[in-house]
Length: 453
Image (cartoon, one colour):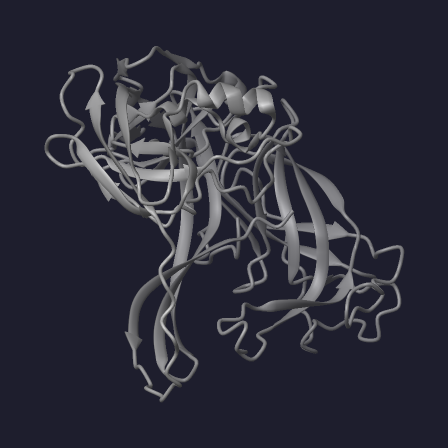
C-alpha cells in the first residue's frame, strides 16, 4: 500500500475576463422559493447562540439500508439558501429556499447540534427506521413556495479534552497534529469522523497545548503524530486567461503516539467523557531520546540492482502490528524511517518495481495533471528481521525476481528476462550495494527525505 498524501491549496488567483457578444435571451421567471426564520439558544445558559452557522440539508427518500460509501459527504446543501450566521439575539433568516423538506443544521464551537449525535454511517443510512430516528432528533422543516417557516433550535454543550504534549527533554511539542480515536460499532478503535461541529484534528500551540471540543460523550484515546512534510508551489494557467498558484504539500513520514506517549495503541488508556464534561490534564511525553533513524535500499533482480520504487513497512514482532510505512524516496533511492523507537521488527518490502514518472500535458478537462507512474519491471516481496537499538543507516533488503511478466502494466518488462540487465530504469549503471550497518552504531545521519509516508 503506497501511503502518499497530497493536498493542493489555492493560494493566489488572478482572473482576466474576456468579453464576448451573446445573443439577447428572453428572461426566465425565477423559481418560486420560501423562507425559514428562527432562533438558536444554548441549552446550558439559556442565552442566544451568537454567530452560530445555520444551514440546510435535504432529507432523502427512504430506501434500503446501506453502508456509507467511501466518498460520502456528511452534509450537502441543495436548498439554494447557503449558510448564514445567527445575530446577537440568536436569530437567523434563510432566504431563497427551494421547496422541500430539510434538516436544519447548526454549528457552534463548543456545542453539539442534534445532528452531531449521529455517526457518518448513520447519516448515510436511508432506511425508514433510521430516517424516523433522525426525524425525532434533528429539527426539520417543510418549505413551500412563497411561504415562511420557523425553527427553534437548542444546542447542548459538548465535552472537551485538553492537555500538554512535551518531548522528553522538556521542550514543548508545538505544531503537532492531534487526533482522537473512539470505538466504532464493531468495537474497533478508529479516528473520530468529522460530521458537524467537531473535527477530529487539532494542533498543539507553541506551548504544546491542545484542546478538542464539541465532542459527544464516549471513550476516547488521544493520538499525536510526529510527521515530516514538504511543499512546492506550482504556477498554472487555466484556459489561457486564469493564472493560478497552487501550493502542493506532501507528507513523507508519520509516527503516531497514543495516550501518555506509547507507539502501541493497545497500551494506551482510554478517557471517558460525559456529556458536556471538561477533561483537562491529558498530557503526553514523547520519548525522542529513544527514537532512531533507519534507512536503506532495496536490491532486486538477478543483477542485484537497486529498485527505485517499493513500499517498506516496519512491523513490531511483539504484537505483529505495523508501526510505520514509507516508500522509496525518488530523491535519493533510499527508504527512510526518520524516527523509530527501540524494538524488534520485521522489515516488509512489497510492490518493489522499476518505474519512471511522466507528467502528461495539461488538457481542458485536466488543466493540472499529476504525475503518472509507468512501471518497467516488478519484483517479489521480502521480510527481514531488524533489531533496532540505535541509528541504522544503509540497510539492504533483497527481493526476488517476479514469477511472471508484468504484462498488465504499460511498458512493463519481466524482471526475470528484462532486456536491460544490470542497469537502472534510466540506463545508468547501478551503484554497488551499501554495506550493512551495525544496528548498535550511530553513524552520521544522511540529509534526505522519503517520498511518501
